[in-house]
Image (cartoon, rainbow, N blue to C red; front, side):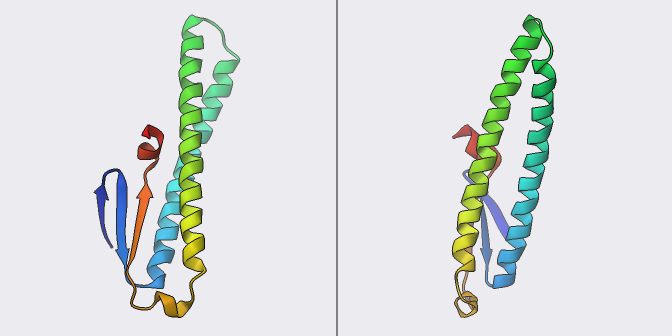
Length: 114
C-alpha cells in the first residue's frame, strides 16, 4: 500500500477491487476507535454533570465542547466515507479492472479543526 499525508488527508492509490475492501476495513477501524474515544468523553461528561464547584464547571464546559466537536468530526467522516463507498460499490466488476483509485480521507483532526 502506498500512502502519504497531504494537507491533513491520506492519499491511497490502488489498482483493484480487493484494495477498496482493505480501505473499507481500515477506515472502519478508525471509526471504531473514534467511537470508543467519544464514549469515554461522554462518560466523563455525564460524571462531571453530577459534580459541582467552579473548577468542575470549567472542566465540564471544556469536556462538553470537546465532546460535541469530536461527535461532529465522527459524524462527518462517516458520511464522507459512506458516500464514497456507496459510489464505488455501485460500479460493476468490469469497471474495477485496471483502474487506479485515489481516496482522499480527512482525519478526525483535520475535520475538527475545519
